[in-house]
Image (cartoon, rainbow, N blue to C red; front, side, top):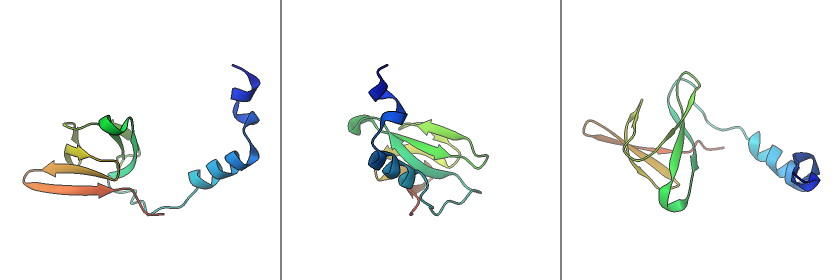
Amino acid sequence: MSNKDTPAAAEPSVMAKAESVATVRADIDLQSTMLIGFVGKTEALDALLRKRDGSVIRVSRGDKTPVGTVIGIDGETLRVQNGGTVKVMRLPRS
């Protein structure tokens, strides 16, 4: 690994932006399962869920979660079905 690949070599403005984004306060209910992010390519997105116990799981379409079965992920929302009810989950607002 070259020196420019190390985090210490990052430009100060890049580091400041990363710090500000990483420390934004958001409306997170620690007592419920929450959508906290999306990962992967646009055509094959997965979602990251924070469970009530604090653990984070990566889910894909068809996976069973504590809040239902994942039926859709579009980069803005995660849709889960539990019985006949569909729940749309969004990222917490900052």
